[in-house]
View 1: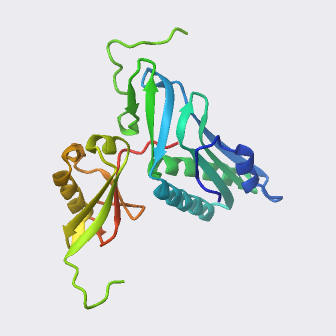
View 2: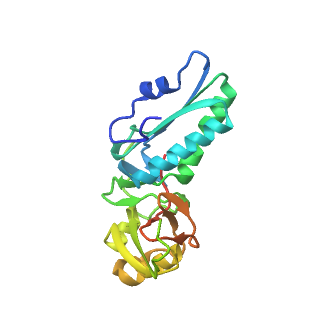
View 3: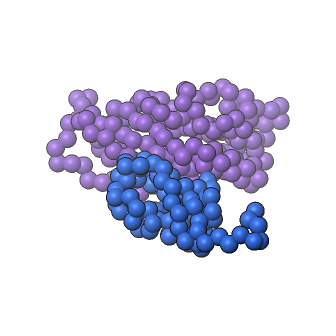
Length: 151
Length: 91
């Protein structure tokens, strides 16, 4: 597997090429894309950071686990640094002889990544404030006064 | 590998903080020396006592030793790298 973390836009064709093989007829792909809202607040941009050596090690472990549980080849990449709305933050691809293992492995990897890989994101909001995202505290009540961009 | 003749009464660790923890503590890298034997919990206590901003760290943060997830009860050895990790937000 190529290095997991990158500061460049993720190279999806390269990841697909990593899992491609004549016998692999099913390739499942997940893309995590920066969205424009969080808990009802308008997000302008994100900054991703990581405990890089541990993120690399944990990502390798997750790939090995998936490749042991299913007859698959997995590739994944997570982008760090400043990302804009619509940018791809993470890609998981899984190739197998058939679609079921590919889809199952792809799901496993993204779920484990979110649970175990030490990556953090800081959100910058339209009202000028910023906040480190805490997924354990999502769906917090929106503030009483909030600048919301016109649709 | 420590030689049999050495007696290790202290443990020197590198502590790494990230994201909101590093901002609160005002530091991302702290070298600490503790009495042996020591656990991650001991490192956290010493960190809180040594670094003014670190008392804001939670009582039971996520932790890693040598780049693997660890518990507060995980022992730490001389030269280990201990990290306290805010809630993960990857993907």
